[in-house]
Amino acid sequence: MNFIVIPIIILIGVVIIISIIPNKKKIKINSDKLGLLANEEKEVLEEVKNLNIEIEDICSFVEKHYDKSKNLIAIEPKDYGFYDEIIDPIEKTEVMVIEYLQNLKAKQRNYKFVWDYQGLTEGLCVYKITKTSKYTKKQNFSIDDITSALLKNETISGEPFTDKILNILVIPFLVPIDNLGFNRELNEVETNEVVKDFCKDTEFGFIKGRIENTEKNGVKYHRYFLSYKDDLKKKQKKKSRTITQEVKDKVWNRDGGKCVECGSNENLEFDHIIPHSKGGANTYRNIQLLCEPCNRSKSAKIG
Image 1 (cartoon, one colour):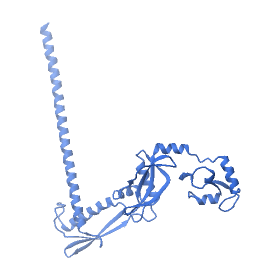
Image 2 (image 1 turned 180 degrees about the vertical axis):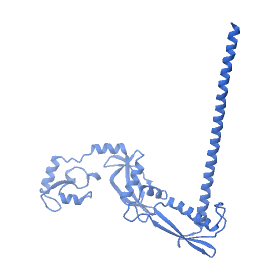
Image 3 (image 1 turned 180 degrees about the horizontal axis):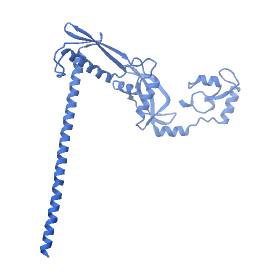
Image 4 (image 1 turned 135 degrees about the horizontal axis):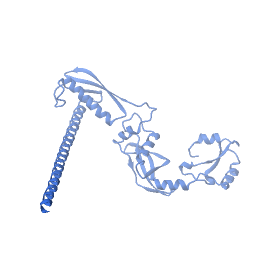
């Protein structure tokens, strides 16, 4: 019996050993592959790092040779240690100028840059640079270009305070509107987009209709007022535009059943003197009679 069992045990042991050896080889092969990938990744990262350093050096060099008062870049055509694969020294200067302008465009996305080779002047390759806005004065700037421009002058958060009318915590939020590299100041539509973009991934919302012009350290700003979204939602639910019948009767009698602006007694509406959107209450003192045309012309102004 033992003569049969012993060979079977040996056979099982051999099978197990044979099955383990390929797995060990696989593990070793996979480890080697991971090692190679890690080395390749390091090499790529090192190449990118060196390339970025070279681009910075090129841009710094061209910047020193850029006469912005004349919009001219003048570079002597010789080997500066850049672009070894390019033989023609004049072509090298052109590629350097292109690299510089592409880098500049990434920082000033609202502008277009065009270069024109003027030829050799006193041994220097001269390039005429034309810089123009890619927007007309009537166009609104895109949020991407505004965000890029704001890297120069960032938004500012002021000291929080409790708003006495709304009874909620308010944080002033200042958006710069000038000195951003644009051909005009930002308008309210554009700064609204900046604030919305800022708020979308935060717990804050902004109080609509509340915006002020201010200036700080020589820079003009639009000042918005932010608060927690949950607090704003609660206030919006509590606040109603409905004017009670008692208030309507008092206002009707006070205003003599006619428009306080033009005296018309047709198409009359109960109007908030301080607009509801700006915190105006539904009280007797804040309600007036206006005809429809006068009310529409008033829009959201106070008065």
